[in-house]
Image 1: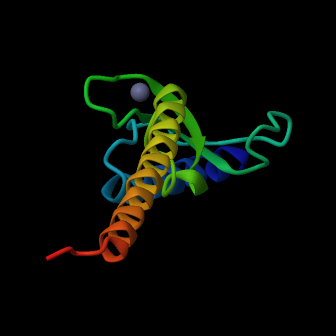
Image 2 (image 1 turned 30 degrees about the vertical axis):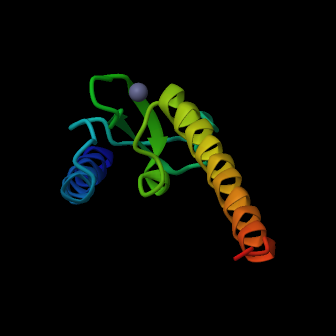
Length: 113
Ligand SMILES: [Zn+2]
């Protein structure tokens, strides 16, 4: 009896993994697993291993299946991507401001003719 339950859930898990894989191709096949309460980290969620989507990086990472939509990079690349976004946001703000100043100067400058 317990064996039947186990194989059913294993089948269900494999089906769930196949469904996830069609949506997120960076999932490593056979890595989906149920996380017990004792393991704690994923709070009873299912977790799966993904391969970093950064080209040339093959680092694998275990994440909760509920995070698949947000996470596609390894921890290192997630960090560098976040820094990059912040740098770009700052650069965008910087290039926007001088434009405004230049426009204002142009308008204010008297045309002597
Ligand atoms: Zn990576």
